[in-house]
Image 1 (spheres, helix red, strand yellow):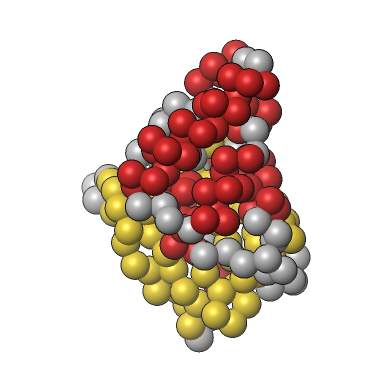
Image 2: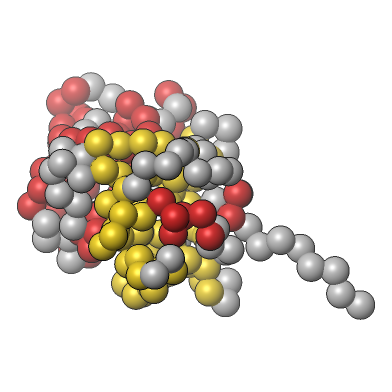
Length: 191
């Protein structure tokens, strides 16, 4: 993919995927329109980097489709100077977009909290069947979390806000986001 083709694909992504899905935050549109998504996918998938679908990168880690990421970032309303945590092995592109928005970004694969720092924004890359308790402890007062929560077998883009050590979620839209392997429901033995 040439640089010219890449620029055209980013413009098309913004115009044909993000805007029609209600992404109106001009900073989010500018960041997603400037960060070269193709640099964050394996060479064999570069031609599909801007397709509106999930990609599996880094040994099968989910990378959220552009529209779903845009919807979450639009609702999270990230602001320059805030601290963000991206949870998930496929979140290099998401982290780059947040950095382009002026946030300080920390990453974790999702198996454990990255430390004691509190974050204003937490973005989970991949659908979550069982939301981990440790994420609530990573949110600063007034912090926001964006994730695709699985309810009844359907992933739904959701925004949560921290309050008294817990997170309350609001659903935004249904989504086609692959499950984050670390947040799958634990099998329960029954007769």
